[in-house]
Image (cartoon, rainbow, N blue to C red; front, side, top):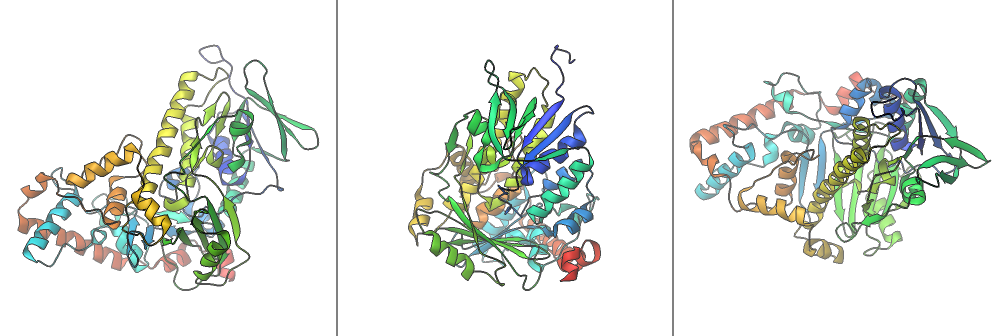
Length: 514
């Protein structure tokens, strides 16, 4: 018994497999106390979305938490390393910039590096000097990505290599299989079957069991809904409402197709803006993942499909598959004894590769608030408060990419450029537009470096900069920036190529065979 008299949870049921289900199962199998059984129910009939192949650096924390050997994980999933995301044609046609992982330069005396860079850029403009150059020149992840190079960061904080940060591109289906093997080895029981009914307690409304085709019944005490867009438990049985964000994120469909590898194995994702949305390109060791996320109100399905196929740089490996969705989230992600993880709780398009992070975030916060049979309302409210805030913060960052554009060459971009914004994003843009202030709220996913890269990349220049940046003499500031840029350039040049690093450390067997 726990201290308040409520009993311990001993039976956890996960409804749905895929990335969300098996990430949850693997974490629970390794982190919950002994005596807790974990059962995962999934149906081969239904399948999974399985196109989310790009991640952000937070996934490293999840893998370490589970004690996963990184090279083994990379080999098993056909993964490559990711130093950032290249955005083409977003601010204007023909334009391109990189949102890199890692940091820009080094702060001095409490003054942020980007403020020093802005001040130097202003001085150069006034004096017709050589120019501070793009801010990406001061980020190792950005310079290495452009050169097609990769190595792991240094643990020495004095080394330039310590500023590098990375994530992965991987095959989502292979990742789910990798985690399933871990989870089942740790005692998770997988049950094959399609859920046909959800039993609830008549008095409390709590979920008591799920019924499967063939009149089978799976009982539980804590239920985790990983059923994808169907949201069988949270949205279906518990009828938790869905709040749409279509007014800010009008894309509601996607075509996805893998293609054969061609050319160098680049260490970054590419997102190319199109007439009614954007196309992704994600390089894996054994293939390339491609997709077109679009608004069905601005382009028809066949035209979107043809645009995707026309943009491939290798032969398509099969027919494109269509997905339909709506940006938004459930009003609560934890209701009674049911927690939604992944698409069953909300959806934000994969522009900044946040889908798997939001799965991970839901899991880690569930572990920090793991309930007993009393299901404390205070703890449930805290989970919902923190998770819903994170969804909104990620939402705002994605909206920024669409809204901060000069494009008016289609009805889609005209809508995005002129739409009203959430008040939370308006406030961030106002602080930036004045003196380039960027503050990271508690628990916010994206760092100031991420906001700075996208704001400048999308062409939003502030009126001024932090007055404290002028405390450093102009000639000293210029020398400092030149030194930083030179050190980063030399460090990137000494790194192995991305392809050579993988070949030496973690080449997948499927790729070696090819």
